[in-house]
Structure formats: C-alpha cells, structure tokens
Length: 241
Image (cartoon, rainbow, N blue to C red):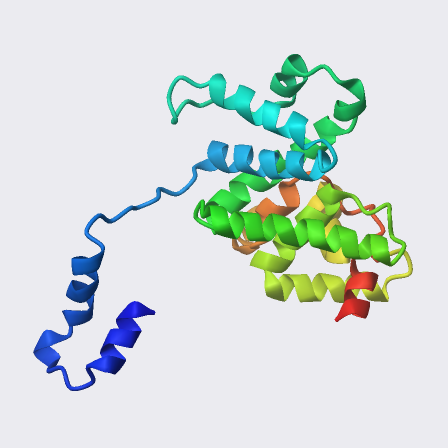
C-alpha cells in the first residue's frame, strides 16, 4: 500500500526509476523479517493448539498451562516435539477434559499434510481455514444440527477449498440422494466398487485414471464418508447462502 501511495504521489517518475518506491521503503524499514513456512509437523501442532483452544473454551487456564508445558519440553525452537494426546494427558490427567480429546486431535493428523502443502505452511491461512470449520459448526448448531462431526466437516471443507469443481458435483449428488450419499465418494473410498466398475478395463488404464484423479489423496483421509448421510452438512449452509 505504501509503494502504491508513493507511485501515486510521484506519477511523473521516469521509467528508469521504477524501483524508486522499493528504495523509498528501504530507507524507512532497514531490517527485513522473513517468517519461514510451517512444515507438516509444525502445521499439525498449530492445528492441535487451535483445536485445544476450541475444546477448552471455558478453561483458558488449562490451555495456557498446556502451552507452557509444551514450550518447556523443547530445548530449541526447531525441536520435533509433537503435541500429542499422550503428552497432554500425561501432563494433565483430567478425564473430564480429555474424554473427547483423542478424536479431536486426530483432525490435526487429517488436515496437517493437506494444509502444509496447499497453504504452503502459512499460519494466517491455516487459522482462517480452522476458523471456517468452527464457524460452520456453530452456525449448524444454531439451525439445530448439534451432531455434526468436526472431522467430517473438516474433510468436506478441504474438498470445498481445494477441489471446487468436484465439490460442486458431490454436493449435487448428496442433495439429490435419498440417503445423503455421494456416488463419487463411494467410488473413491470403496475399492470393491472401483474394481467392479473397471473389471473389463486393462490395468494400465485404471492406473492412469487413478493418477489423474485429484480426489484420491483426499479420499484416503479419515474419516470415511461413503456411508455418512452428508445432507446435514449442506442443508444449513444452503439456507445461509
């Protein structure tokens, strides 16, 4: 924005001085700070902390204690320390707080690789994605849909965020189905269905189709959705739109 303002303020600068705005900023800001991208483990830990923040919404003291214990467990900032279920429950044995923790933290395993790759380890974009997950969950609860699973919702949002064309197709299948299932998802998640469909095709052809299908890696993520009624995950969203 500052570079734009400088260009607007000095519109008659010759082409040979096109870098003037950059040099102008360098006189004001002399120490560049470059923040490295998060790797897959760091992305997973970051997502786990965001999930913990969501889970411990009414116990911020415990959340701060877990954060401090995690930092104290590392000897260097780049230690490969994992914020795992065992780490949390070993440090803080509170059964009432950790009863649903294992399934919640599993979402970080589900999302870590995809978000580290697709969002290039950008913390701001990762947090934006997670905020969308939490917001969709709360909006669904307003509409009386209190049984939506965060894991299912997260996987569907990955589809929406990174596979827009396929997402539209699957939404159409779900909303027009009598049981809320998607034939596309069934074909991806159930090997028997795929083998039957391609029984008369050469093996190399089936392999080529698999390699070109952008949803294969997404379909491998837990939880499996082929037998889940996905209509509740879309009905409230359509109403909001």
